[in-house]
Image (cartoon, rainbow, N blue to C red; front, side, top):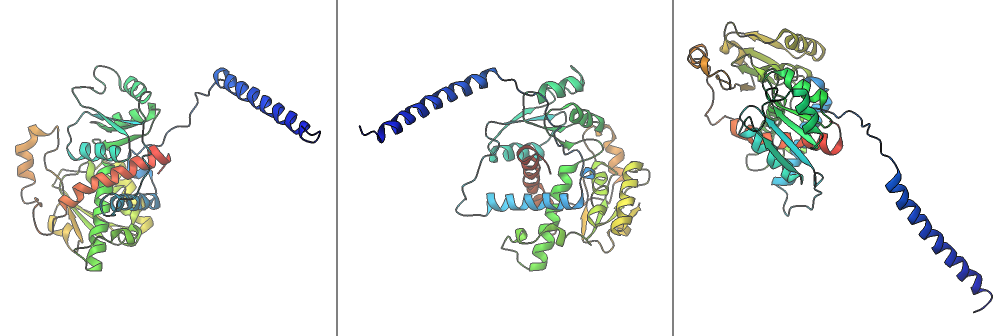
Length: 343
């Protein structure tokens, strides 16, 4: 071996020896070092009142892009499965079909696992406190979708949870329903303007270009859906006229938020007991079931009170497209909170 090569060989051996020692030291450090148990508080989706107009518009736009990716792109593009190895718990103290199917299929599409816990599996605040439930369940899963009774239940779950909590329904608010409504309105207005009935092009226009200036009429109960509309529609520049029977009123704090937003965006806000007045010049009429879960004893009275308010089957009905859009909007929320970390 030449005198020139020998030092190089020695240096190479020394370098390899040092590298081995470094790896061993690194492995030792990995086993011996401590890990911080302090994590930043997770973002939640409890009501649209917590988010700006731009955030809501962009969330709806993301839902539309997910729909196009999953439903209309051929061949299907290769995609990441960002929730692989992650679990979302569905804590449903109230029955659901659309929300459960939408959530479970969304989590599966993103590569995760949805664990359904119904009222027979878990009774929020009954066998154990809400605080205990939130702390225990959130320590084992990566996200929680909760469908509860009183709004205070979802607020406490979110306060004590270590992972994102999504409100699938509470007595006060129903944010995932309203996101689906907004997406459906955008699709309807966009395709009506384009004059295309056999092509999907809603993804080519941002919801902020179609939704502001619309007039939406609500005809029905002063319930959680109307209240969610009140804290979102005026903020988005959507005019809202609500017709409810005599004696049915929204919470005062919700009405105050709606009025403040309408003054800022100049969106018109109206309350009436006359459906004909509410639907005058409306672009869309929205309603809901007259008898919600937990109101079965009021069925006869409510059917009398709401006689003449019913709107469902017609060639102008958007009920079933809206039901499908629950999936895409819920998927967008899950993607935002469990993948990206914020909306």
